[in-house]
Image 1 (cartoon, rainbow, N blue to C red):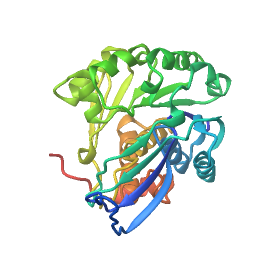
Image 2: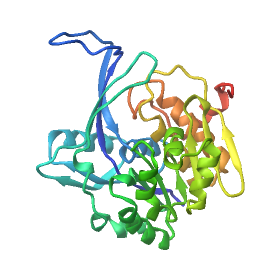
Image 3: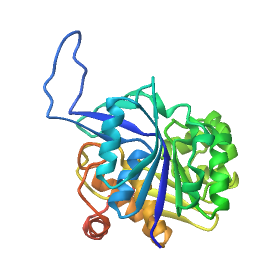
Amino acid sequence: MTQTVVTLGAHVFDVQVRPVETIPEGQGAALVEQIRFGPAGTAAGTAVTLAKLGAWVRSAGAVGDDPIGDLLLSMLAQYGIDTSLVLRRSGVQTSASVLPIRADGSRPAFHVPGANLGYEPSEAPVAEIARATHLHLGGPELMGGAAAAAILVPARLSGVVTSADLLAPGDPGVLAWLDPALSSLDYLLPNEEQLLGLTSAVSPEDGARALLERGVGCVAVTRGARGALVVTAEETIAVPAFAVPVVDTTGCGDAFSAGFLRGVGLGRSLREAAVLGCAAAGLVAQGLGSDHGDFDLAAADAFAASTPVLPTP
């Protein structure tokens, strides 16, 4: 059965500038090596890598009725992503970020939430979601747990596998805001900082188990250079990151989500799914932007089989 994924939520247009160590003062200017742009966000960025890995992807959410929205949707379509479920908002701009990338690949961000805000459960394409095999919510905290649950519950009743990734930094207030949706999630894919902030736990294992107690089926945590940790009620699986020259960490979390969910959709074990997620993140990290890298599932698997991993700290 073909894996059909609806990625619903944050659609962001990213502009990356590299390398940037300081912002020039006043009217000053600085020469840089590279400026590029591309689709990003926990829905759109994840959609791109899922499509590269062979899933059939439909993206849903909202962008502005503006030139940035035109460009964002056209770039998604170039990857074979069906954008017909994305709403166009008049009078509000498409969400966008400007990312000054440091030489080590880290980056601050200048961000406009734009059309991502205000998406309502009544606007969700319920019938199309029910025909999918998988629903991935990118940034459910933008709508809140009750609204997210209104989308997730009918999806699960239709037999759709559900997952979510977060945009916001974690804190206990965000966890309370999301709580109504947690029991309707088969997979939650936060990064380690978000997880520890959400749960006030002292370790990612403890944080993941706190989310399992709230009803999440499986927690897959990204840990940067330390790889990923997958926790269920039955097991805890640590998977190392791959040793790659890091250019930009933008979109690595979304790439991991896509690889992990693609592995799940292919019937791979949780460990194998996490390895595919780490491979996708490693491929994306070697260039600018969430959509970096001309790879498919076979190339990602070959990369995972041949690339050394980083030692576990």
